[in-house]
Amino acid sequence: MKANNNQRLDGHAAEAAVLTEILATRTADEWESYLQSRRVPAGRVRRMQEALADPQLETRTIVHRHDPAPGLSRPLTVPVAAFRLAQGGPSVETAPRQVGADTEAILREVGYSGPEIGQLRRLGAV
Image 1 (cartoon, rainbow, N blue to C red):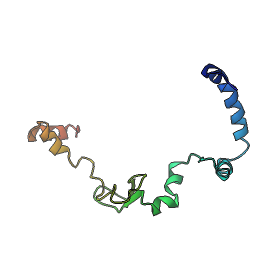
Image 2: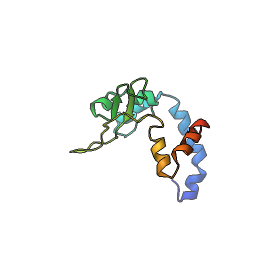
Image 3: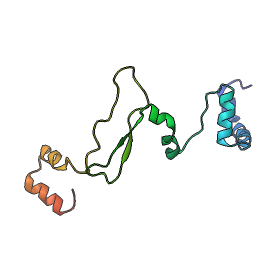
């Protein structure tokens, strides 16, 4: 038992080495099952592709799939939200806008003229 935070910090490296050795005795899947079966709220870190393939995501509508649209050469899946509300809540209504779709309007809004925007386009700046 440690009497204070300094003692806890002093023992950190040794304890981490022991835990690393213990954790190496099983796979992440095995540890996840072992800990959860003992009511320890634990989950392994998943790669993005694996996390997105989880069937819960589809049933909970946490992601939204867009069909190909202008600017999208293939279907696109985007996150909506990781939570649900009893009524309403976040949603995705339209596909993402094409890159640069609002460039001219934004440049005009900040004071650029038509000829100046044309010059920026010719220079490859926009």
